[in-house]
Length: 633
Image 1 (cartoon, rainbow, N blue to C red):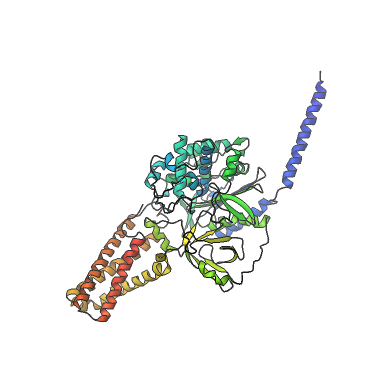
Image 2: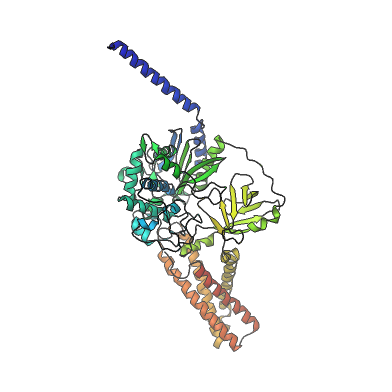
C-alpha cells in the first residue's frame, strides 16, 4: 500500500506531538509527586546559616529523587585567595570514608562474577598471611560488616601530606597488620585497615591496580568525570580540587593535599557533588544508571540488605553501607572524614531519594552530622511518642550503670594511650527512672521500652545492652552507630586508675623535687641506705615528672601530624619512660634495704613507701598504655 508524503508527514507530526504531551505529562506527574518541594530554598537557607555561624569556607550538595538529579549546588570558594566559587559539577571534595562504598561496590562486582567468595578466608586472595589468632578465619563478609575483629590503628602512617607519600597499598597492608582482638563476626568495630585490605583483594583478583579498576568499572560506566582515587590528582582534576584550610591566628591557612594512598580504598577519593549524584542514582536503581549497569539487581539488593546488627531489634550494617533511621525512614549510606573535609551520603530507597553533602572545614563535624536529619525533620517530620518510664525500673537500673568504651580502639601500640584523653561513655541511673548517658552525644536521657532496650526521651535514638560474656551486662550498641560496638571499660581504665592516682603521683613527685631544693643541705649529710633512697627517689620523681609533662606537650603540639609520622622529639622522650621504670625499681630496692636497716622513723618509712609505690604504679601505667619504650606499629 502506498502512503502519500503528506499523510506520512502528518502522522509523524502527530506521533511526535503525542510523545511530547506524554513526556510533559510524565514530567509533570514526577514533579507533582516530589516529596522535596522547594528543596533549593530550604538547602540554601540551611547551608548559608551553617556557613555564617561556623565560618565554613566551602560546601557542596546534590540531591536526587525519582531517578533524577533535582538539585545540586556549590557554596563558598574552592580557592579562597583566587575567589574561585565552588561548582557542584566540577569542584572536587575529599569524601573520606564515603570512598569505602566504591570499594564495597567493586567487591560485590567480583562476587557476582564468581571471582571472589564472600565466605572464603581472605588469605586466599592475599600474598601474605593475616595471622590465625582465632579458629575462624576473616572473610570478606566479615569485612563488609566491620566485624573482622581487628584493633584500630593508624598512628604514624595513615595520612601523609603532599609531597610525602606512604608505601603502596600491597606493601602497607603487609606492613601494618593490626592485632586481632575479637573472633570475626561477633563485634562490630570500624576498620580502615580491613576496608583497604578489601581494596587489595580487588586489585589482586582483577589483576589491575585498584584505582584503575574503579575508573573502568564504576566511574566510566556512570560518567563520573570529576571523581578520582589518585593521589596526587592529575593536573586536569587538580585544577578543580577544593583547597583545604585550617584556622591559624584567626585566619584561614592553606594546607597541603592529604595523602591516604597506603590505605587508599578506605578513604582517598575526591569527587564533585554531581559525580556522586550519579553513584547515588545507580544504587537507588539497584545498580543501573542511564542504561549502564554496575551491579546486577539481585547483587545490589543484597548489598543494601541487613548484614549485622548489634541487636535483633535494630537496623545495622548492610554490605558496606550502614543503615540509619530518620523519623521512621530507614536510609543506607556512609559518612566520611579527613582532617580537612567532612562528608555524608544517604539513600532512602523507599522514598527514592539520595542526599550528598561535603564540607571543607576542620570544625564542620556537627554541621555534617545534622544535615540529613534536618532535611528529614523538615520534609518528613513525625511526632515523637512520649513514653512514661516504668515505675519499677529502679529495681534493675544498676545493672546498666558504669563506664563504657568503644571496641574501636588500639591495644598493642602507643596509640592505645589516646584512650587517656577520653572519659568514655558514662551510664548513670536517674531518680526519674531513666538512664543518663554522657560522653558521646552529650548528656542524653533514655527510657526503657523493652528488655535491655531504651529510647532517647526527647529523640528517636535507641540504645540496647547485652551480655556477651554471659556474666552481667557488658556490651552496648547505639542504633545509629552499627559499626561501633561498645564494651564495659576495663577496670584499670576507670577514672581512678586513669587520672586520679596518676595525678596524685605526679603531685607527689613534684613535692619531692621541690622539697629537695629546700632541704638539700640536710640530704647531703645523710649516709648509707637513707642517702641512697633519698637520691634515687629524687631522680625517679624528676624523670617520671619530666616524661609525663613532655609526652603530653608533644602529643598536644603534634596532634595534627601524629597520623603522618612519629616526631623525633617523641621518640627521644619515650626513652625517659624506660629510665623512669629502672629508677623506680632501684628506689624500691633501696627502700627495702632501708627498712631492713631500721635507720629511719615510721613517718619517713610511710612517706617514701608512698613515693616508691607511686613510681611502681606509673611504671605499670606506662606498660599498660604502651608508653614504655618505642611501641609505634
